[in-house]
Length: 72
Image 1 (spheres, rainbow, N blue to C red):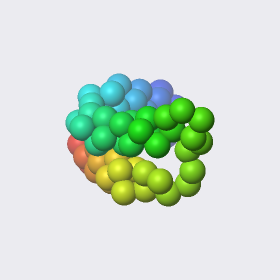
Image 2: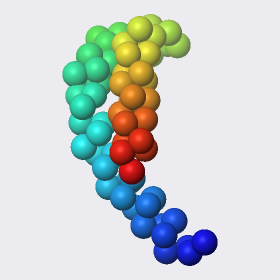
Image 3: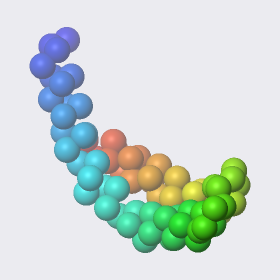
């Protein structure tokens, strides 16, 4: 197995990540707004405050990566 083939495939997958993750812009914005809203003033972010929003973002990222990998 050629080492250059492995690196070529890896580079191609990495090249596609920004465009795949851009598909999750809405989920990222919702999660970011939740984090910002729960950390106003002196409040600190605590585990599970934005769990629903994080889960939606995680699912979107997972789907984006799966689509990226299956297309390579």
